[in-house]
Image (tube, rainbow, N blue to C red; front, side):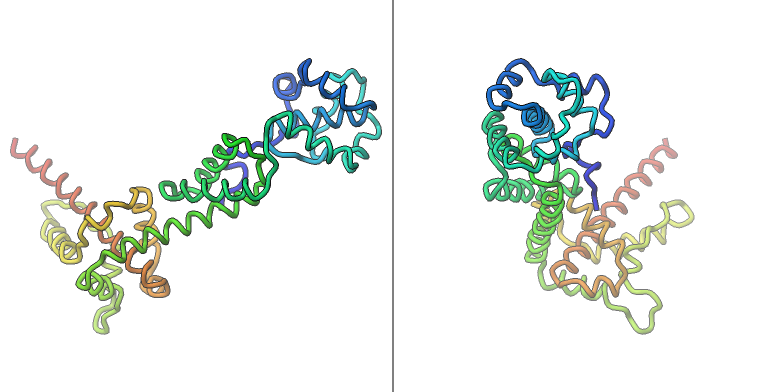
Amino acid sequence: MSGIRDTAYPQIKSAPSARELADVYTPNFVELVWAEKRTRESAPRVGLLALLKTFQHLGHFVSLPEVPRPILEHVAQCAGYGSIPEDLFRYGASSARRRHMLLIRDYAGVKAWGDEGQQAMERASQDAARTLEDLPDIINVALEHLVRQRLELPAFSALHRAAPHARAVANREYQSLVCDQLDAAARERLTNMLTRVEDETKSPWHRLKGEPKQPTTQNNREFLDHLAWLKEQAIGPGIFREIPDVKLKQFAAEARSFDVTSMNDLTETKRLTLAATLVFAQMGLALDDVGDMYVRLVAVKG
């Protein structure tokens, strides 16, 4: 499962550089005046500015104990104080902090996280999952959408839950689409492939997953026999027309990782889709090998 560091989810560095302090965490003149008008004492003022600068960078609020000391010291100095106010962390648990969060959202033009944000995150995750497979990519698309919509970012855990759920929903939709287009003959061929024959040590599924040797003058017959067998199992490519390549590759890779028992433990829709996709993928690889063999033969004759 992907982690926060695999994504673009914004984080605070524990040891920010002098350049980062200057570029990211320095309140400008307007912000200093804005904070001064809304606070009277040092702790609330530094706290308000620290919340503002971290929120601008992260897109969500963090508690003051989570803010590295160099950032707090820098903000305090920018506000005209020689050091961090002693009662700053007491401010962090006060009602003043909660009021200041409202002020910061209004100043930044950002809506608080809530039902609207939850729905926007889920929609963006679902849209992304239709064409993407990697969870960090899905999370990054959702993040970009939330930022564009001027919505406060949720905790990473919310995105971490939404992305795999969206991917599972999208994949089930594609699997249903493929399965619904399989005719009775194709379903029977795929089912037979996943059935172990008593007098054979290996199932047709094992044969399908096996990678044939590259065609040479010594094993051309063996390769062509395998190609002929694949053609007998072939599924019309038209049923995959609406399935993105990234999903086809994922389904085929997943199918390749399963043995007969594991495949038969899946739901019928998923089992038939994965099997059909692997047949399609293996047929493509075999035809590529035929093309390479033809090129070599032409080169030899030339």
